Image (cartoon, rainbow, N blue to C red):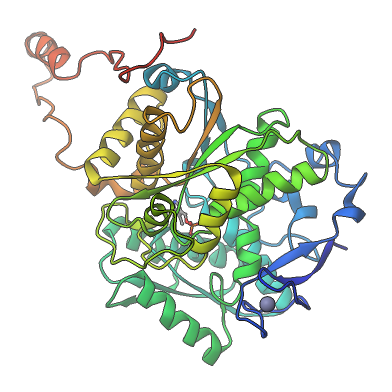
Length: 429
Ligand SMILES: *Cc1c(COP(=O)(O)O)cnc(C)c1O
Ligand SMILES: [Zn+2]
């Protein structure tokens, strides 16, 4: 039993049965899963959710599956951290990190969307699954497909980081490297899905896949004690996560599980691939596709499938966007690691670097609650940090030699000092 009503066109509202379908026949608008919220009243409660498993499946009543979850039984329910050290450095009062760098089993937010998509693929009876990926999605599809006994085909741009390739291959998928960028890979995958009748999670299962991203938002609210952050900064690639976190917040408001504090959504992109943020800054409704050139490869999507809805939701929520160049992204990766002990990949560095800009420019006030979406793990992209640190001394195992280098080391890595932003008020606490 489920509360799913239909697939509904986001443009004209036409409804379709639950089937592998991405667009509306009338206007080619994307279709989205629609639920019967009236029927949920009194049944989907804080208590019913809290009684669920410690995984993303505690929100299954708000997810588009019919039977039992089959994939990702340990995915989701990642830590929400009150980041007081970082808050002090940034001069803000109430800062949280939603840390999907710790997501199980492949250390990115993608374990959420894949858990839902592969469960749905099994309900539909597919035996082969696949994806068009910038790396993290391929890891997640490969791992979850291995555990579920499904055949997996992963399609990636040919020039991904080595860690991103090995991190998939170890799970035994069929991998095809495509000469081109992500948008070329995605286009090819649409043709593959049609011709081979495979479940390409972010293509023909996209309406189900994207719903899994809501769990990132549900968890933020529940872990805040059933409250919404006033400001949420989310990295944008294809544009799944940001609108779905916003949808999650609004669903919780509709169900009366949280108070409506008018949560504002902010898009973070790398300067080398910022179609959505450029549109927000220009005041345009439509974005212009770009050719990506950034170290933030997992979010380097120049023609985002749901970019239009990111722009719409950011505006409607009263938020904004920012972009950060590669050096700022690396500095932010180091700052997060140094202050909170969290090592994120460039996507997470982008989120923090952009949040800093939004705070400095006054778009995000310093005295209201802020949540940053950290979506991936830095261990997967070690190469971007190469050359960032001074050589450590190598010595013989002799105390005298240690005595000689210990002072030298203290100079190389000074104790973290407070590097407050210009105009920041005195730190709290
Ligand atoms: C996929 C991904 C995102 C966001 O992607 P959307 O397509 O916009 O949902 C963000 N961070 C990381 C690390 C990712 O892998
Ligand atoms: Zn339509």
